[in-house]
Length: 148
Image: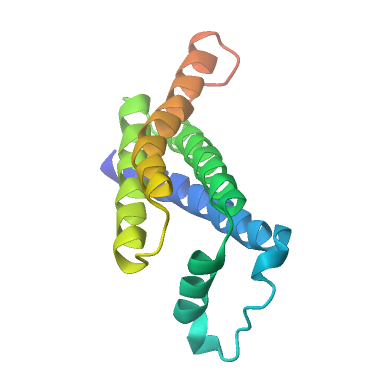
């Protein structure tokens, strides 16, 4: 049982992080203000991301918050669907993991706007819980199979 739950959390985390990373990559392309940042070597990714954060316009961070919410919701859906019991609790646990990763990002890259940092603190738990709630409601109404 614990192996299945662990794999469910890892699958939800992989889905959430993939969606968030894809959104970050697409998000950077949307803004012309960031075109002057050049990545000269593969090892400069850390430096590059610091420059993106310093130069990014407000719309970049708004889109980033939205992508974090979408990623947390879909990751919560995946986690809740794959666990056997306590779907919302495991979805919330996924939100905790995503939240801790966001805290690490804030500590490592210190140039985020304050409103964005506060937004990250309040976005992961509700949206991952929503993913678990969606699965619970779909299974309760027999719109999603529950034959595990």
